[in-house]
Length: 247
Ligand code: SF4
Image (cartoon, rainbow, N blue to C red):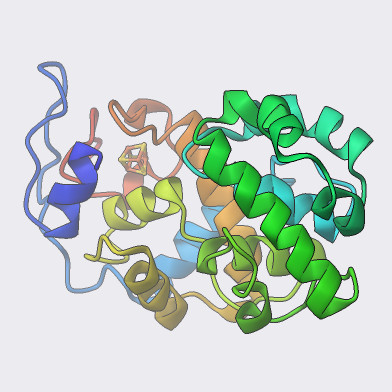
């Protein structure tokens, strides 16, 4: 677990992530950290900063997004995007993927890590799609979670990014870390983080907020050494591991 996740999840002041880092003043949780006024400011700032944020996994349909998201576990979207063109060129439908030779799937997705388990999962997911859902990706969390390799996060990605259904908030490592740094939650468990976020984030922001936080987490609020001096959220942020603070 990343260092800051563990500490921030317990809502304790963090030690600086390195010698150059210095903790912000007033790093403790503030009573108004989840106020609608502050949340609105965060949402507006993120929307202005990332007006076109979308899912970084390349896909042309719900099936491809489902498979790509299963493959994205424990690896980067860039890494997944390197293998999916060949995968979907050879196996473009649930039926074709369900009937693919497993060693061939393992070869194609090998670089994404945990490739044996992932090959079984994507083939299992294709089989369930074919046998239980007529080859179509379902539109509810409960149905999606019947697919091997699909947990709540993946279901939320597919529902939000493809169907535009705000069934929940995608909580990946970036969304979890940023939610803690921004003091919107004290939880480290993704499902609990999602619950906390859903209480304060208006539903019409659920889908876009995930995209924006993921972009921000990749570009600015990175895990080990956040670039706070470049961060548009800095005036609103009291994270204990800030590397620069204006207040
Ligand atoms: S100020 Fe720093 S810790 Fe806070 S959100 Fe921005 S980059 Fe992250």
